Image (cartoon, rainbow, N blue to C red; front, side, top):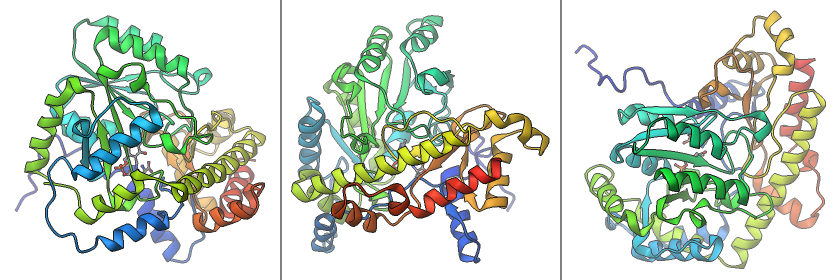
Length: 417
Ligand code: PMP
Ligand code: GLU
């Protein structure tokens, strides 16, 4: 049969994050030394107490309610109330098979223009294409760590008034590792509220703010913010596929509509995973220790890699959370151009080919092709070992915690010279 593909899909390629993961693994299996700084998954194991809960619930075989297991929805609501001061109840919570799927459902259902700060995570824009949705990139500046500022949002919204819009704001940010402070959040909230922009606040890295000081914009714009998160990053459980959305009361209609689409597509999230997630969200000492140590490890590695890159005249915003850095090679533009490298894609191809270091090109994050920058995930280390090391010695350095990450950065440094 001739290929007959829906026009919204024909020009989509496999997601850049998943391609680099599979490509790095294949290269490694073929015997090549690869520094896996391309894919962004948590290096840490799932806390033992949560794994134990999953084992104890392996027998859970029934389909669960579409919106999620009620005990889990309650635990997620309490977690967000206690940790981030969000005023919510179980009825405001929706559970899905990864926040990525819930992000897509929202784009599918909510009529309106999608607004994306430039750069933004790789999947938001392709999801807009799948949902046949128009989108606009909002520019950012190096001086503001490539984060969206209120004036830019105001300028865009003022161009056409009373247009329904959906802004996806992600902080701590993938790809930059920067975040937004209280003042910036308040200013963005004021503009969004003025123009009635619905915000999906993608706070999946909120719990891995390196100092544990994450603030949610939902505090300043409660009626218009959906808080998106999940188990993948803070609980080391990307492959478990569990995402959480917390909605304002005003958007109960949207929760219900998302549940309609869920009921006709994925039905419900895996039962054993939902039962185990209750343990994760109920928290306790073991989980607090796990989080504190994870943050400390990430902070040490982030600061060291940032410092090393700066020494090679590769500039990046100061990392504040998550596990990414956004190295900007533009100071070396002339030399790179001479080597025939004029796009971020070519830059990452050459780096992988010549040094074995895998990064992701910033073109996948919506930056112009000729912006010579990449996203670096500093996660190629043994997370279980690093947690033990930092427990024994809270002053452990990045070279001890993540030797391969440091080696990879040094190879980038040599290469750029
Ligand atoms: N948002 C951002 C910024 C991400 O980096 C990711 C990648 N895991 C997701 C959302 C989706 O996460 P998940 O589907 O695993 O919840
Ligand atoms: N969020 C991860 C990343 O940015 C990968 C997982 C995914 O893309 O679904 O690399």
